[in-house]
Length: 272
Length: 272
Image 1: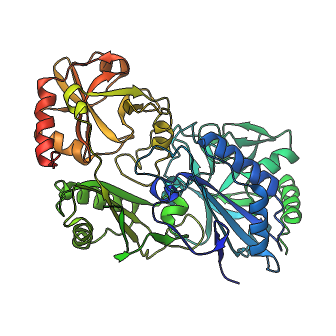
Image 2: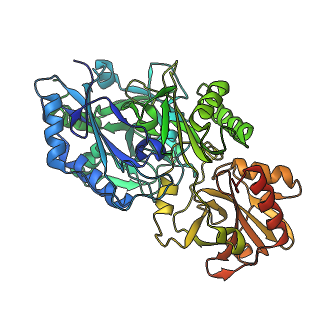
């Protein structure tokens, strides 16, 4: 099974060179885990995508069409990672969006990564990145195509034993990992950073918050995080990644983390 | 004359759907004015592009190849606007850049816009945008592909009589227009905003600074700008755009602005 791709519904691996997604990063994307045509967190992904379109002032995709395309690409396949890219399409030169955009969609499916069993047993190793997240409320929360901050942060290390890097905002608070959200139990209280100023409103993050209404959404400072009793990352592709080594500090994988890990393992069929 | 396009040196209007330029905005671009194969500010554009590659940790393009491609697309044509897009190419899923990227280049030429003669005579009308520029020193100055802030700012107005919109940084200082740099004479001293925290280090801006070594690079607050004696915008495609109406305040096009306008009109062959 290799990568399969639909561009505006047709089998293709090419897009227009003057698409605004390439010219300006003018669009959004979703990355989701799909098992034999079923996407467990589908509603959450579609909700974020349509909310993102509203905020960028572009038409939302037809979710039935997307569902059929995702299904067509993944049916009779093993677990897949699907990326849906939705851009404002082609346009005349210049930043100004066309009055009636002809949006472009790309749906790509590839084999889901096989997760290292050690990750769930002992937890993963995580570092801090130097690259900061800019404070930009107009774009915060969205999974848009402007991802150079994440690219620069992920380029900071090559050690394959380090699975993720935590990113701080320009004002110093810890916000998220390069491709996952952050949860920490600090003084007995679970907290996840707000994504009002930067970061992505993860679909797996929303699922954790739905499971744990008592989890606080707030600010996590570096010092407080280093004193946390439990830390994990959430991802709609990789599930719950318990943190066992936080920039050199050993952490136990606690009971709450194990509970949430089990919830996501079942939800995302991570054993599949 | 319509748009002509080369992708990696071959006539094409398509790029790979998994190019990191589309996936993450992982790349840079230049937009330049070319007259019959000659690009007056070529050295400045190539300098910014190669400096941008260094900062993003990607290989720089071969400038001789680019020059040949630009020349091939514009030779025997009228004045053209050329866009050069340089991305980190295709890569495995995930933000991490490939160890040995096969960068992609797109060179596109279209007819240069015809400038309204009133713009240079009486000056243009300019507004203030609500969309702010995030403070991000890691990306500031670069002409990278993450341009959603400019897209949102340019989407704020449709009145064709308003030619440009000024953008402030998150901390309130005025930084630039959506697609041009800003110069203002305040209390007899020319100033242009620093691009250390946000904004693009314009090639035309560098040319103005080279002509006027006495011009200060600093901070321009809203209040000070509204008291300026002269204001203009610089663009390597449109030259010097004198501001005649700054968010409702009438401004004279002063002698210094006329001098710089004339310099760029000759340099960019704007009469051509």
